[in-house]
Image (cartoon, rainbow, N blue to C red; front, side):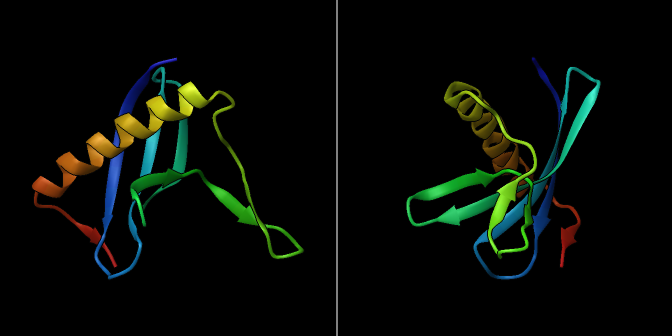
Length: 92
């Protein structure tokens, strides 16, 4: 599996969520709505999720292996850092 494209949409308003990201895998499959969050220990990613009937959030798509999650997070956060240096549209 190769990440062949990363699209970063920076968030303009204050808060812990800094960006919303879409990734393309092998030029064939897209995962939207990965969030870049600023936590107490730094930036991390949150996979797309939905709220269940009991009020909890459950991931819709997520990596199974920790090494895959680490790889995704590294690539996404590097892309986010590059996007900060570029002028561009911000989500409000």
